Length: 153
Image (cartoon, rainbow, N blue to C red; front, side, top):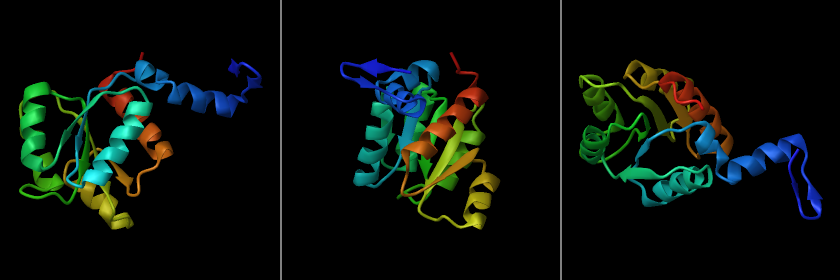
């Protein structure tokens, strides 16, 4: 349990408070790239990740994402599917052909049908988050990504 002046938090609340205090990123140290063309969605996912304690990079299309990944070798990429110039599928395939340590790629898409998830996995993505994005989904997927990347403190 966590306490604050005049308040004692339950176990569930304690977990949420710890997350919001930024300790999540300390426990799950990941280098995250966001590939998202929609400005509002960029800001939403950035805000969620900032609250978790992460500093991220953002690419507005697949070409920018490839350039940033090539330069900084992020170990997690949150990849929108529908982007201009190069979509998330093309970008993922290009990354999968690189001879580098492969990142954990999480698709972010408004397409939430079961076959959409399968299509993402068939195109080389490791996981899938439906839009609108929730804090719970992000936390769950980042924990899995940290295990995959061996990035757990």
